[in-house]
Image (cartoon, rainbow, N blue to C red):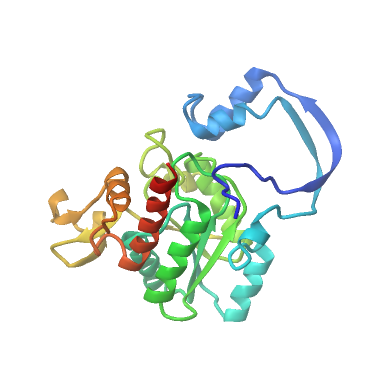
Length: 297
């Protein structure tokens, strides 16, 4: 299986070119600033965008191939039309979408469950990104295996659908959150979960910028609704996962919080994170992944 973190495999398409335009560096920088909110070359999205050249093509596009996605992820990759048809076959009307570029830990799992319960939803589409991420992130095939194991073991049948789309992460924060909403609207979801630092990277965006941007979207421009979520974590006081802003009597010590660095260190040493943080079945898959990395290093 090809690793989308190591090589780029673009979707092949024919383009009926109507216009060809060469743009200047200042014009490109203006666009980058508006998309990413920064021109910092260390921002992965900025670096990619400004490294693509200065020629823009426009015209109608006909997709000829879905690149490696359909072959490498036959059970996961779906077009928007296919997802809509699947939702219709399942008889779902209120549908929550959850965007993820990572394996899902307990807090993510419970966030999907909270959204479904509070919205009285028929089901949830866990819609994972299958394209390129930044260096060091978990490959798509490992994320896919983790998510499917979690859904199979911990959710009732016909309540969660696992799907994926062939797109690279832009790390554009709030602007990308709007793009994600359009994607999920097109695939038939009625609600999109937008959590803390959605589509963010580093400290380029505020923790809730991806939620407040939707107050700037003109009324009626989007059909999909946003389910705003705070950071979720396991409460030792309540013995369950909660949204942290809904537990005002808690201190940081009352939550089980692990940094990404600490989790990777534990997994690399063959140690599963606490079950309150990660399901043991998911941790086992991740431990195997990190052990393979160590063996090939």
